[in-house]
Image 1 (cartoon, rainbow, N blue to C red):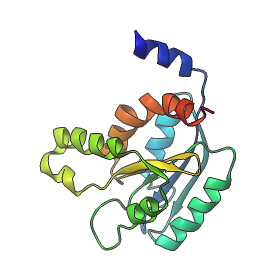
Image 2: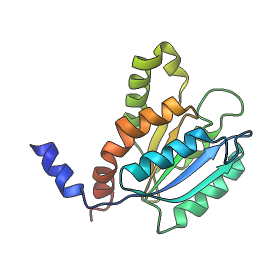
Image 3: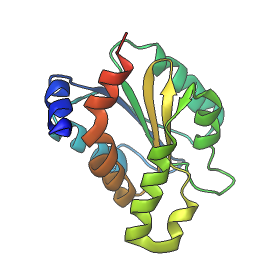
Length: 169
């Protein structure tokens, strides 16, 4: 009953997202994960206010994050790619340095659910979430399966509730 009540109260909120794909090789045509994120957001009745593909470079991500955080028409930023452990994977380092509040449960739940699907390889993901400048920021792996899992099982089911909590005075 309590869950239904908080869901009903949160229902009128429409979230506005920015979607950022970090990749040195993907293009608008080959960015399946970015396309899937957009599709899931729109199917859930929300809006993609911005979508961009950038190189997996800390300075490029920092500049784009700064720009997206300044926009009034964005409530949440979703990144895909750059969350692994290779030398080129810098997304988490850039984002976590800027977090004002972390949402450790997001990464923990993502890895738990991922473990159920792929086994011990889930430990290689550094998926993360938190709040920067009053906006939600989620860093997802680059695979389509990971994006699907994070969006359908964690982010979209809670986005209205998260935004309602952030907007409390």
